[in-house]
Image 1 (cartoon, helix red, strand yellow):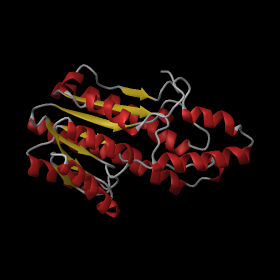
Image 2 (cartoon, rainbow, N blue to C red):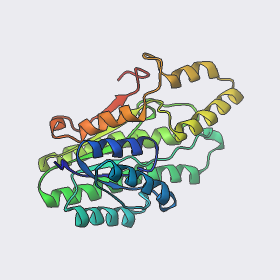
Image 3 (tube, rainbow, N blue to C red):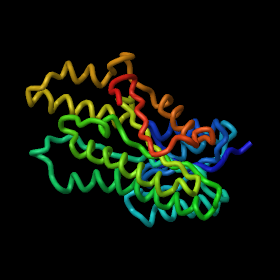
Length: 261
């Protein structure tokens, strides 16, 4: 039985891939997005879903480009007959000392992590309102959207912004039975985290910070381990379900006790 139609951005690897696979197992038809340069990897995820008995299509595009997002939502709706779940997962990170940073670096982070999510929220909501059957919009924040981290000012600012966007969108869209939530992971073992950790530890060591303390924080404070991409997907699939309807406007921490709201 098909539960609905879901579009996941940044679906070629890491958290996005795990979310897409889990939603497929739960009965959703999947539309998989990532940059055109990730086309081959994205098609591997598509093949995995199809080989496991699911349905999946690819919609490559850059979420920071408004026309790309508008086109992908239209494509999904025309191919599958609508859109029920939007997971705006795509994001990038830059670890750089504030005093060495550039406006161009900040603008690039904002274009993907904030404006890209805005595009996804807007065009998913337009489609869902037109359908008149409600929907679920889910964005990617971070533990860095709950508290600042050294050398991550751009990334942290972008993830704080998702919380405000999510809350305001939830208030506006609730009358259409559309919920809007976000997930805020801690350290999740993905290629992006490896790059972040490497850069972060280098800057910490060069600036006199204790790398031991921060390495322990990345691992986790309470359960002493990383949260896995599959565990993030467990949360997202619940937020995508009908049962999650009373939850909206929330940015849910999922970090093994690394940070308490």
